[in-house]
Figure 1 (cartoon, rainbow, N blue to C red):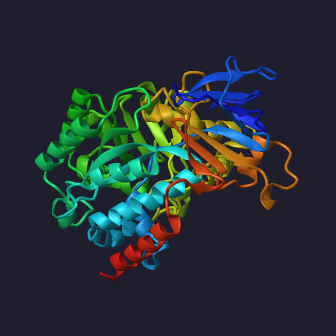
Figure 2 (cartoon, helix red, strand yellow):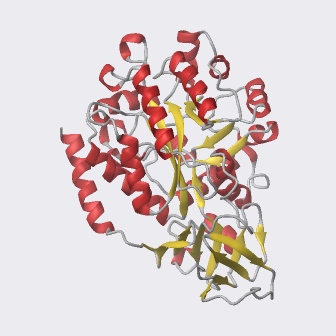
Figure 3 (tube, helix red, strand yellow):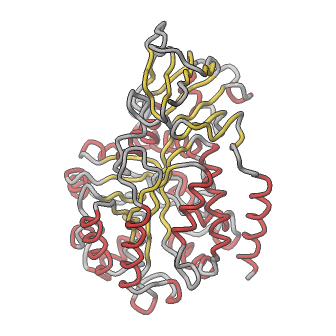
Amino acid sequence: MSKRLWIKQPLACFDGTQQIETNGLVIENGKIVELLAVGQQPSHPCETIFDARQHVILPGLINTHHHFYQTLTRAWGPVINQPLFPWLKTLYPVWAKLTPQALRLGSEVALAELLLSGCTTTSDHHYLFPVGMEEAIDIQVAAVNHLGMRATLSRGSMSLGEKSGGLPPEHTVQAAEIILEDSQRLIERYHDTRDGAMINIALAPCSPFSVTPDIMKQSAKLAEEKNVRLHTHLAETLDEEAFCLKLFGLRTVDYLDSVGWLSSRTWLAHGIHFNDEEIYRLGKEGVAISHCPVSNMRLASGICRTQELLQAGATISLGVDGSASNDASNMMYEARQALYLQRLRYGTQTITPELVLGWATRGGAKTLGRDDIGEINVGKQADLALFTLEDIRFSGSHDPLAALLLCGAERADRVMVAGNWRVIDGEIVDVDLPRLLNHHRKAAKHLIDL
């Protein structure tokens, strides 16, 4: 019988929807088994008690779009002032030199940064498989397991090279049969459908300008057959819209529909440039959007129309995007920027801290097709992020929950995944972070110098 833990009398608690008054929660067998009312005691004795009177408790944050390997090309001079298409074309040749060792280091650094920010579940969209990188997703699985986190790892792909009118160089694309064979292998080996799963697999052809319609159709067919989710970039920039019109004769949502992707199985990164009719169609079909505010501002791509999408029935979540367009992997930083960017469009009373934290928790869980995480409630997985307000930036703050975003919380004091403490006193358990960063910096320099 596992030990019961009482996380007692938190300073504040957000359940995924709203701030709640509680005397704490009881954890057993990796799940929340009791959510106590004010003054209520646990129903049975608890072997361990954690005094949370100085802590604000959130459900573990959920990141729904990332490219782990891009931590190796942060703040690289030639792309600092470029928009998306030139940015990609400049970086593709650098990324094509990726090695298994560099990917492992890049993934572990991305995961560590996410975990320290209170993120317990992440997705990643890996679409680079140059020669020697055939087991890229296997490397990521090992990195996720090493950090003790949950992840939906997307088997990305690029099949439309420059010779066929696409954006990627030819040596970065793969044949359709190779993509589909590896996709099936990864699903059968790693995809876990059980409650509390640590690893899920999704299929993720990269974007309209880097894959063929055929691989989109075949991926949708395989995803339905294997009951996994679909992910891609869509409507990120006006350049992408123009590309779709020129090559396919279709706007982005029409293209999505033409390849069988307009369904509740799909989640889209960015989703900025939709018209009203397209928003209606996306919402009607239950498509989810990963809002990536920092990347969208960094590349001057635009502002996602979150409120119209929500009203239409779409789901909104948050993604830090690749660390070469952010250039960070910090979910609290992302949530703060989402709050402020969305207020520019919709105002202060509509875009509240609770709404945005909901995107980062419950919205993320729904986006990834999960109902066992993203909330603090009985029966949910014990994935938690605990923050203190001891830093100078919080001095003089009055609303503990709002202070996390308004005062700029960036690092959790404690993080729990599946009932296990993975961060204690702001440090990751069982990870030599200085050593990891030393190797990562050397790999980043080597990649650029090649």
